[in-house]
Length: 336
Image 1 (cartoon, rainbow, N blue to C red):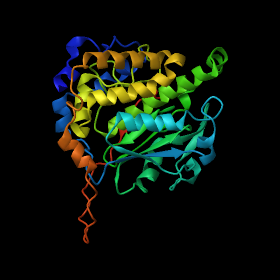
Image 2 (image 1 turned 135 degrees about the horizontal axis):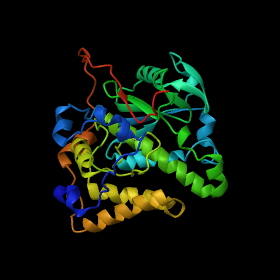
Image 3 (image 1 turned 180 degrees about the vertical axis):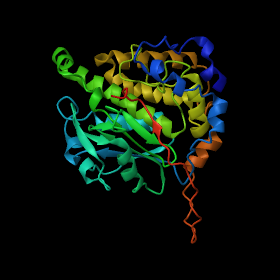
């Protein structure tokens, strides 16, 4: 059954076109080696278990922002849809939202500077602050913000940063919002769907890094790197290579996941060509896999591990395992 889900011969997945100047593969190909499934397993990726099986989402904003209507009437894309996308894409992982906190309340306080998008915060220092409050059952904690970010003083911005070793990440949606000219020529529903699609893509992509998935160089996949100037827009789905990697860690039923994502994306299909394109892909795959029995691609043993009740804490805790403090740089602009 999994062979049917992963066979690229059907032509369902879009090939990568040659990159243009300034695009991710043009600038970063030398730093983005192919990651085969064997390479992925050899990298000793983070794998959730019954003690660490929750994806925590940490909104970094004024708590009132999330209660406002979705963008463009309010400042944020629809939070319920973002959270639902993570829950459906990464099932059977648990997904939980932490109480919203402002950037200025983080400790230690991250450095900041001004950009054309307002106050811009040092992403690496945000990660250090998030690391201090990582819940015990967290597979990872991801800071989510509409504040602009930068990774180092000589870079002008970054969409997101993740430190796999410490299981924390942060990503910003502010540069995904439509500009004034786009807002003027689109309906409110189209603007909402536009930002939501780009925000979902960034969120799902960054969480993929937490599972050890590196930038994809095989197909025009969700995990492909992005400088924000790509002529070939990527999708809200994984290619066969990346799908196999994630499935090995989570054991979900591929067909059930496709159905669930289609149900979510269809709500915005009429207002977004990008959502429509993703819906067409999902329908194509569901049609191709219609003869598979329900649950035939699920790894029941792997899913049972994630469903197992947490073990009671032992009286004496073992010494923590040493980990590398190196972070993984994700989609970013060129250095200034």
